[in-house]
Length: 272
View 1 (cartoon, rainbow, N blue to C red):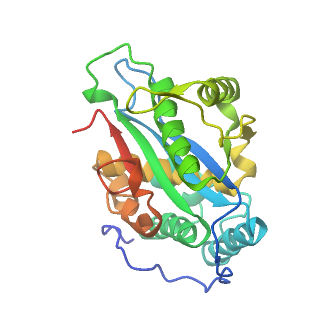
View 2: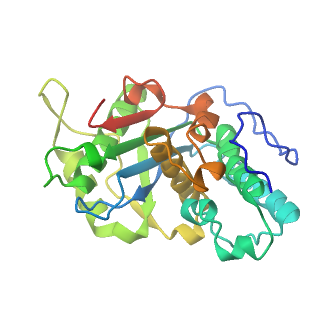
């Protein structure tokens, strides 16, 4: 059983079909979003709440999905993990029963996590995360859900305004009503950093809820969110043998650095 720290080298994997070169920018982007942690501010909750965002161009969307499917087939052939098995960060780092029954150790689970993130470097036009260190927040009545989503939507607004490319938000179905209301409100009325009233004209108002079990891209957003949460607050114990603070660095080629002054694709609140 391999229990070393995760490396930054390419995991040994089956060669995947390359995507065609994209000469011009995308005509539309999907922003797949999922979360890690809980929004509660009381004792016993998670220390962080993180939203992971995976940007996928609509151009060659099917080819990009096929690339992820190829990766999943390679995982199935190597580790006997069913294609239908949801790749959920907490299940991977906690080595859920389905993985234990296959006899997979920490090294194999780390490789599984790496393979998923490495596929994103090929198929995604950018990844970023919004993370709230709840343990450092002074205002204990903070609406963590509203604040984190507002920060995320503001970054998407700036990106879409700069590029002129519309963005469609695709999120986990679990909080459909809350997300839909937030997106609608934000798109109509929001404020710039200097206090000017603006609207997010390139964010499509009709957000799309998806069951994560049925969407590989939502599953990848979940893995992105957890990796970002570990980057801002490193873990101890066995989970760190599978996903430690280096895992986020695998995504460096596609970090959306402009989301914060950190330069690593993570906006952290409160800032250190």
